[in-house]
Image (cartoon, rainbow, N blue to C red; front, top):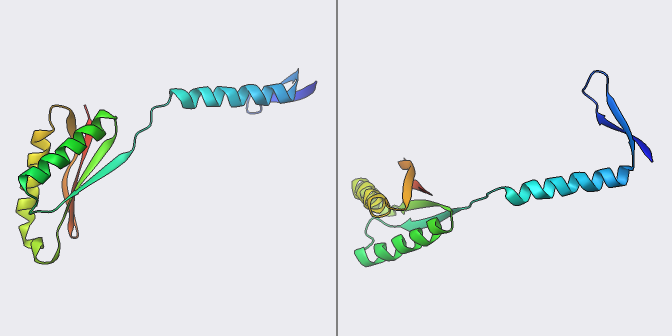
Length: 126
């Protein structure tokens, strides 16, 4: 048996006489139980180009649906190379089309934003 300080910030501090090894074991069990009930998600990324064709886009939307079905967030990225940087309006239209096609099962968490040569948007499950 050990003298264990339970609450050091209380006034006066609270101590108990108990088995310290068992106390530590029960604390780790409580932490593991809390982690088990916690929900986690990942951010998956789908990359497209401004000149991505319709069939390729349908394939990408299918992948987005699969990721969202597994409760992950999806970052849709439009990458501009070289002179494609002048096609930013086409990139916005592409992201708007993706958002429109996925509105049944996903919500736009962050609308399209341009950062250098990359435009992205984040979709989250409904």
